[in-house]
Amino acid sequence: MTDAAPLVLLIEDEPQMRRFLRAALESHNYRLVEAPTAREGLAQATSRTPDVILLDLGLPDGDGIDLARRIREWATTPIIVISARGKEQDKVAALDAGADDYLTKPFGTDELLARLRVALRHAARAGTADEPVFTVGDLRVDLPARRVFVADAEVHLTPTEYKLLTALVRDAGKVLTHRHLLNAVWGPNATAQTHYLRVYMTQLRHKLERDPTRPRHLQTEAGVGYRLKVE
Image 1: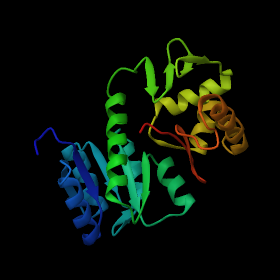
Image 2: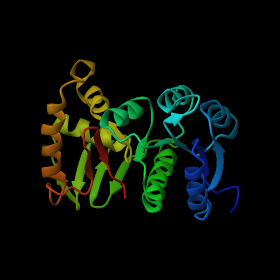
Image 3: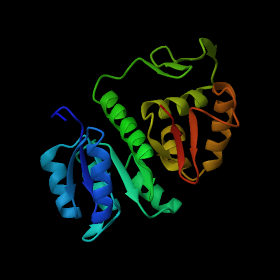
Image 4: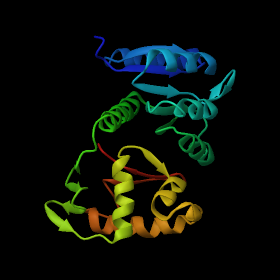
């Protein structure tokens, strides 16, 4: 392991979970710094400049959602929430507070590592100039030209369909809540109109997915929102 290995800040008060994550991450060439409280987590986030933050919501001295919101005020570091709270409203609250992703305990090592890879790739893209062409699988979105291709065949989208797709592209790999997408595409007065999203996501899937009933790219996060899957 070298200093070039990604640095993960783990904010988690449960010793057993810290041991599990320490073994999983260090065996896959991640560096790790641990914080058992919200206060220490905030201090480490400020001083250590981690590449990714793993954040538990149930901390002894504060709520993880509030901590995510505080970190997001000044940092763009990817935040993956790890929590036993599996209710949709908890996921939505964490994502709206600035978290990038959400894993419900218990979870497996492979899923955690996949989410970390996605978060790191997203951060790398965000840290450079916007890529003019986004590609995943057989989907290609040429942002400057406003053109979309599937398997090299051009697909014609309506202006609203294209706006929804580009909102997902610009945060590819992240879970985007219904409220976030509705605000991005239709504006703040439409944030309760979730049926807009269902209609347009169905239309996008019919145009972009080989099998719209089993989408590979445009993934639903039940009760929460949508994600453009990048792996």
